[in-house]
Length: 244
Ligand code: AP5
Image 1 (cartoon, protein in one colour):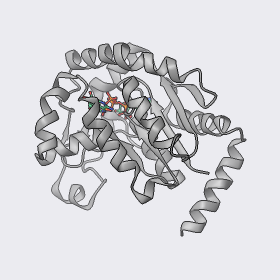
Image 2 (spheres, rainbow, N blue to C red):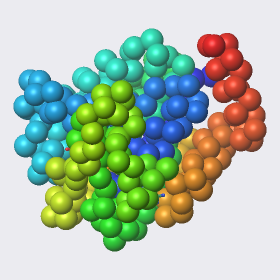
Image 3 (cartoon, protein in one colour):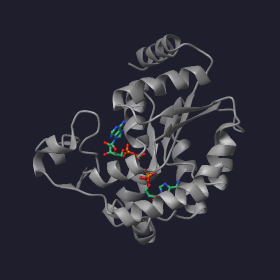
């Protein structure tokens, strides 16, 4: 059975942090629209030039553009056994496009997990976030506290060799974060309400430690699939064993 997971929640809720680890531990790709767009901006591609100003204002890039990117990514062979979507969908049109690409195409259920965190905690987290200026990885994801950063980003060989360049994300200033939260409550939250009526929807408390959120996430996914966490783990272990 394919494991199609959508991480929902406001900016700073921990979607990226959890998506990264869940994808790695379950042998499926993480598809982060924010990462794809930031990479395009960093590389100065046509897409990057088109979205840079919109992202820096904290607004959403157009549905047509982002739906095209995700649709194409989910058609890649590595996404056929499942995926973790981080940052998509964010509007009703994006949610419809995802249903069409997965449910209508008989690729299994879409499990939606919302990470809930109060606004003031979100702002605190996002203002404190530092990312690698080269690869974009979060400095304090799981292993590190913001006040005890490793000297070098360890994510890629290039980061390990070029030296430390921890920076704030260009859309993490307080006024842009407040705009992102406004956009979230206006455009994305109503879509989550719509998802919440589905039997495959779960909400988890994101104000716990990253490890506790991880456990809650695994529990939520297993429950949405109607199985105990141990059964999900053995299903994944079998698949990873077959892939090895
Ligand atoms: P995107 O990159 O998706 O940003 P976001 O949704 O605002 O989410 P963040 O990345 O800020 O937060 P997160 O929930 O992933 O939290 P994280 O794990 O990093 O989008 C950026 C922009 O791209 C958008 O504004 C828009 O312009 C455009 N875009 C993207 N997708 C789009 C779409 N579908 N349609 C249109 N436009 C789109 O954690 C945050 C911090 O908290 C980190 O420092 C982390 O280490 C820390 N942390 C994580 N978990 C915990 C915890 N449990 N306790 C304490 N700290 C924690």
